[in-house]
Image: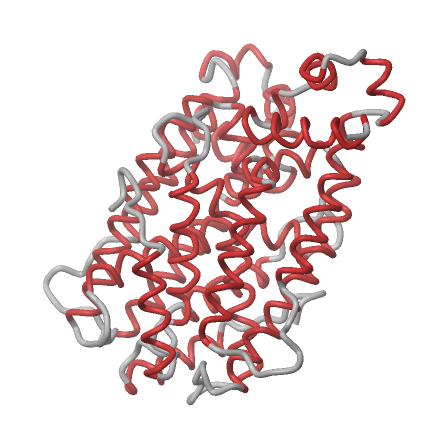
Length: 221
Length: 221
């Protein structure tokens, strides 16, 4: 594996395990047994490493949010979308553990995050509209576009804040590593958004998935 | 007004307008035309001022979440709860503008925030259970307790992250003051959680409130 790629992979795992704030470029170089100079040859600073990791995360999420295109959505798609999105959040969990701090201290990342959020919400709306059009989500008393938009924004808020909720409200030790089982509960919570809006057939699929992804939250449940 | 109270009120308005990070105890003293020594006589440091403001916020939210007790809940109660909760968030918006940063840099506040969150979610669950018992929320295919818990957690995530969402995703300028109209849209979003779970009579009340609190989000809607 090329040095540049080794640096990126080591950085991602150190950031995820220890938190991005705690890890310096010197730590990364020492972890790989290379000189700081060799690291600087590939990346001028830690922000450049974070920027490259964020590009990969962006690409992974864009893939996860693609519509099937050639066919209508089915209830199982929704569960699959969420599973894939939470996998991406797990793979790059350092981003969400202290997102606000990361955006405050890295204005270039902050400038990229806003359009990324807007694209994700727009794509989320397209998915919810697809579910309405496929007759899976019923919006009897309400405009389907407004319904899809409210659902997309609420999903975004739950998805992007679940990691920090688990770390700050659920876990008793602030510095603890994130428990992947508690992350999975996030799927249950986002599926709860559409409860009551589903056709009876879709409700069976979603209630089963909610049971599968249920995980008690210590201190809360 | 006593000096101690003047310090608290000036701090709250400076924190809300400029952000807590940007405001030092020297700024607060200068703003009030008192000496830093006089301020230190009342508060040893900025954390003590934040701690006192947080106590007031905690008390205000505990009041806002009280159950009526002598009568069953009605659909209008839910709208009133959210209006009052968002008023509290507006009054102490500095807390939510950079909550994560505040909790990282102030471990004493962080230690108080976790039980505060747990109490609020428990009280939120009691309110949602009250709505189920009053027949306003219908949970046909699901356990009412699990429904109330999922709703309470999702409401907490929306309520506590709405300010930072508006500041980081909706507003184009990161340093801009928060627009109170955009905060009101948060009520619309939390009400959207129960769409489809309401009796027809309650749905009329909630859909009207959702229309009242609708506010387009620049860049998104």
